[in-house]
Length: 298
Image (cartoon, rainbow, N blue to C red; front, side, top):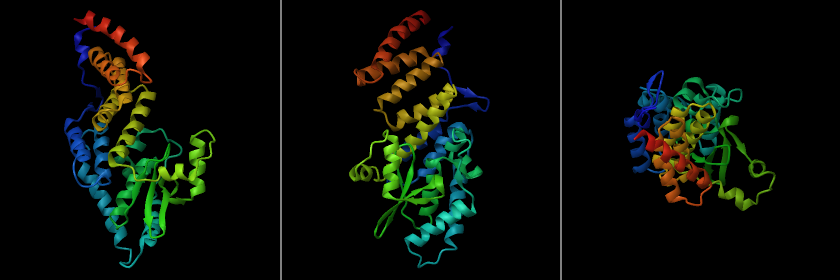
């Protein structure tokens, strides 16, 4: 083993995995002005470009524009929010055939927005991004909801708000349905109305994009694709630099890729930020072992 292992550039058969230009554009997007709910599609496409080298972000944004224009041309100017929402759901889920990929839920393509647009199959969060973006193009102020285990969409209405499930054709969910879902996540505990209501505030753009990345990280880690997992984690650390769990996960990824110095640096930083954190014991043991390995390389 040589020191060259410490600074690799993860690659796939398609070429270099990392896209510094896309990463910088993503950073500017989440840190810039323009409202925290804007440009979800652009952010998701920049994430997808990491795994699809050369992906034309503008081309897919234009595809969403075309969907919006096609639908807008059918909607009377006097249509209210409810009518526009019904038209949106019919258009996307009945006519265009967007659907949840129940048969291959863990296919990474479900988390890549360009693939979702092409195949019209996705998971809740990527279908939600399509629904939100096309909806905004017809004047609907749709918002994402980072509900546990199942991303949802909120549409403000004069009498309150509708909560929609894009994975199930955009159908509206009652309060009781939301409470049941939350109770299942929490091991059968029946949540209070306040607990459910607390989860119905719009998800910040940064958190939505981080959730897309966490999905990709999980899928690649489970499949042993450590270079791809590392790319997702690096974007997560950029979006959420104080998320200590991501530092520990990146360290573990570096270790799998035999990037010992990088793994050691991340474990040390994790311990400096979270000396009593959930992964502190693992991190301390890893530091001892990695210090020996790095010393041997030098």
